[in-house]
Image (cartoon, rainbow, N blue to C red; front, side):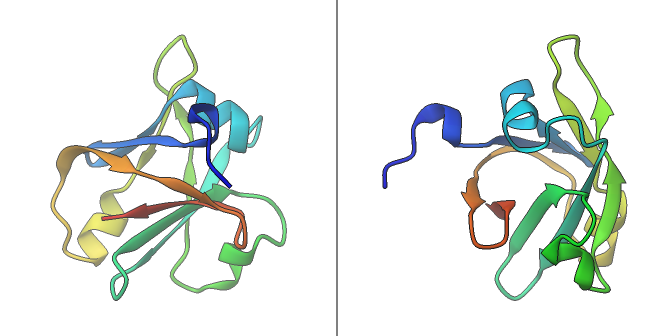
Length: 112
């Protein structure tokens, strides 16, 4: 199945923060105020999901629950990745990712 532009999450890393544009937040997070973030160093994958009760990512001990902070009037939000970057010795950078929605887990998947 081909993804249309509105189905592709727009995700950027700006320094120590992960930026999600307003359309991505509205489409996959709605009114949920926090996100679950899990990084797997072996696959270099970062998974970001709405912090809802019983979500698959909440079952891992290394999952971080982070506040989705409002950044723009348009509705863009950010996640502070300081701990994740430090824990995995990843550099703060500015870059745009080719992200996708993982339907099996129910999360945004980013390859770092």
